[in-house]
Length: 221
Image (cartoon, rainbow, N blue to C red; front, side, top):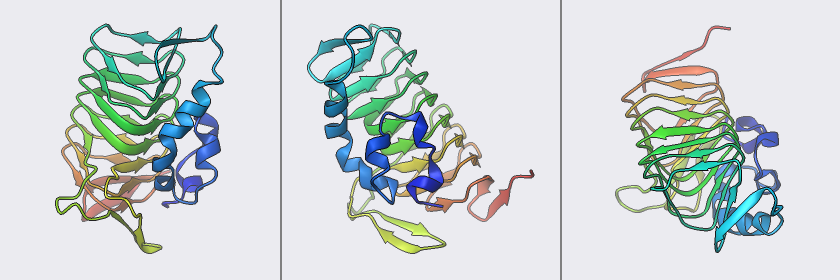
């Protein structure tokens, strides 16, 4: 439930060359910046603007004047970056995405069709195809004691990540309810829904509905 191939369809991201080399997706977090720089040099000038160093924005993307974008960063085709969005760097944003008002991104991969539309913080995280974070939901990427993050998998036990900054991995089609907090090292399986105002940690299985930590039900087929 926590391996790259179990969470993501890699045909929906420009990061496929990086992700296909790692067993666990968080192993790719340290390579996002270099990947963006590598891809950026190959992007066609007739499709992408290059407004400043290490920043590439698709010409058909919509970026509001009040948005802040720092490199390395790629903004994909038909993506909308709304008012006061704060992209701090190392952000690979796919096609047809929404980065909403006052949303902050740092060291992330957003697959195609991802929506983080209202007051979200997403740091040191990967969001799969068509993942959606409701208004005010955030990834918490640092533990209170600053120790390295451990992914607690029911199938594989405690997985040492070697990272003290690690937010969340959201599988394809994950739905995160409004004002939820995804604690460091959270992994949300494909097609899983998190109830609003949830405090989530650990691994939530695919095709499930998270109501509370003690009430997780499998979706009906």
